[in-house]
Length: 145
Image 1 (cartoon, rainbow, N blue to C red):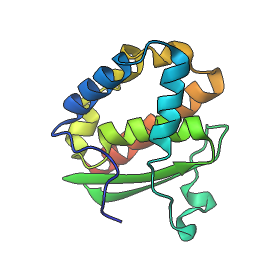
Image 2: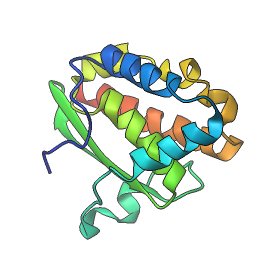
Image 3: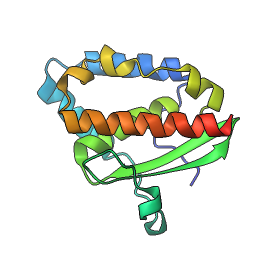
Image 4: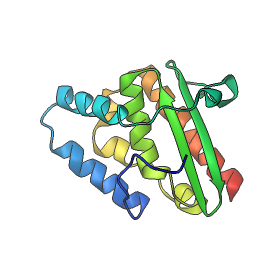
């Protein structure tokens, strides 16, 4: 799997800026949640052989499978969830981090979460799952570097 469903932003920082701009367009959180759901629908499904326990993200109440490929120069992440909103959260994280070098991943905090107000609007279980997702990405980058 090499094709990315994400816009090709040159850097993680530019991806975060684009996310901030996109979410600023919406007036309320009902619209933002709908946008998250729409983004999640853009994630390609994973091959059945990737949807195994070894690829399951633990710490998330929803089912999330995630696979990392690559090396220190470029890490690509492929993931999907059984939850529409969680798939949207996965989409945003992968838009920022997938296809980047391990060094860029480790140097980039997920500022978009607070910047778009997401931190205040997630349930505790979704917030825990997002923390687990970001931790997985950082761990893979750390291991590759």
